[in-house]
Image (cartoon, rainbow, N blue to C red; front, side):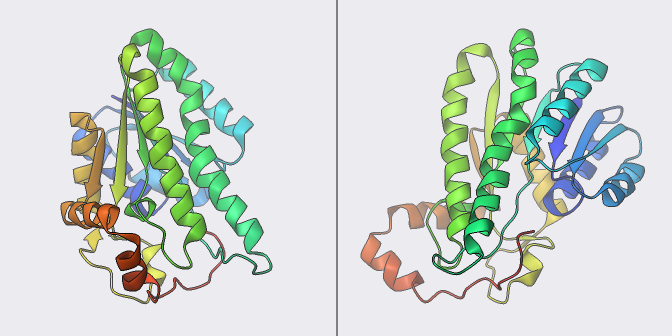
Length: 256
């Protein structure tokens, strides 16, 4: 098995990498992240597989394309490409500096998904097999206060992946959307409000890899958040506004 994974050095990406190393001995796993030291440390922990680290930011289109081309040239087209890299940060409209944060979040969380897949589509189409996976979020179902940039980016990711699934269906490629709920990671560790159905990252990775293997078009993890997402999707705007207008705001920290 050949896997290419972005956002690999911590959180969900780290857990997914470890899960594929556990379930696919002999696999080749391409690892993309910004922090070279953390990336190389993870590569050293992935026993029984070939770990190929690429230290880069997914907003660097040229570097990401070069990494993808290098992976295909050395190991062939991947079986699974997972666009997991994502950031969050303050995006209050009209607040000085938040405009740059908003743009960076969209560039990473949406355009970065597109750019992660782009180097592989041609070779996967030629083979007529493979799975492209985007890590979205239940935050993409409805907007939440203080999370405008993040919610917008995940909503866009969900819509983009749905379009891509239809686009690539005749070619034999599968597109899988994974929408995590609250997962215990460094990103959620800063939250100072209740997080229902909070799940450990390693448990999430098992369920995500299972969903990818089955080729599910859309999977919410944990499943309980799937019911919450369905409810939020159909909740009339007046009731939604009443319930969530005073929801706690995420702590203001730089995009990470």
